[in-house]
Image 1 (cartoon, rainbow, N blue to C red):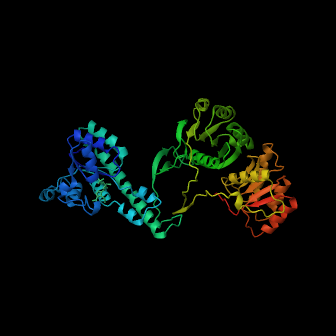
Image 2: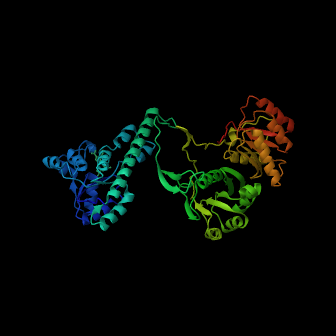
Image 3: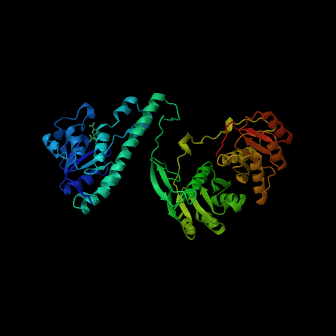
Length: 523
Ligand SMILES: NC(=O)c1ncn([C@@H]2O[C@H](COP(=O)(O)O)[C@@H](O)[C@H]2O)c1NC=O
């Protein structure tokens, strides 16, 4: 194994956390420490002996830090091949640097400030840091490069265990990480500068789309066993998501578990009262609000108890013991996800040791505005997430009969659920609960028919129910069929060429119809 002894290290970091401990380890192995202005001052305060880079280069830091390390005495020291460049290094008084510890100006944090000017953004583009990182990573056969404070401990342990040397494997792994780091940095710079160029228009779709995600886990397989898969996290994944959720127990999450738990959790966030969403194959099969979570779960389960088998269950409140017990007593489930779990809930669930119990923490009130991606052969579709939901004052009431207050509540409930049902989506709802859900059919009438069959199978009456449709009714037949089933109120986007015909049908049946002006296709 090609071990590299560390004799001289250059440390230049903006995020100074943990670096003093690493420097102490290096010092204990007799490593000479070189450093730039602020980092050197901090290390001296920690009582460590440091040589200023300016002393090595014979050149002061100038232009307010724009030029500090950009010098052949530094870059030659990082790039020099010990076995073939020794003569030229000696000729120019270049002494090799074996370890580079750098992290860059906090560009992303700077541009995230709402009042950040272009000038401020530009001053925060690190030039010397990336140049050194790339040089050291290129020469990883001789040089170790560390860009992530999370790697300091492991490096210290390796130095301690191997008498101040670093293995070829570690150097190669760190070099790969280093190139990823500078690539992400430049991606962030590109995106921010494009934003300045385009003004405040959102969303921003850069000319070159280079997203960065960090691997959370390799998975046993993907959607099917013959597909390999891994789960990646946004670099700044927020709390209250499947990505940042902590697993209390159970088997590792599968690819389909993650997708379904995400659908269930994002749906349950739509509700203010205690609520439960049960998802199967990406679609809610039962959704309900209740006085408490047990009541919500009971009603959600009762919508379609057959489909709930092996389902993914999400709650919008801390899960208590009685709720967990009710689930355990009644059904087989794959995943349960909620902001948190009381101790007796965890106790109740521990009897089903394969069930994945995911605590996601509390989510922020504001919806998560991100890009959604979908691969197509040879390309990528990018769009805003569908997070907007119509507010009651944006509704239009085109029919003679207006919905009563209780009907309007049922309509809004059904509408919130329809946003998470694959198109064509039809949702029948009663008071704070689904009665039947029809998902993913190629024709809207078929979705309505399936939703009605589901309600019938569950013994739930549609008399007086509300119906939501994720997109407009192109013909009156959907309304006629709904009336036959006893539906009294309908919510849909409106906007069909035949809206007049559809409104006339609703009027004939005494149905109160509401237009949202907003569609929620989900494919
Ligand atoms: N200009 C240079 O030659 C240069 N060399 C290193 N830096 C950066 O300066 C920062 C550390 O500065 P200080 O040690 O003064 O706090 C690091 O983030 C490092 O990436 C530089 N700054 C920006 O380009």
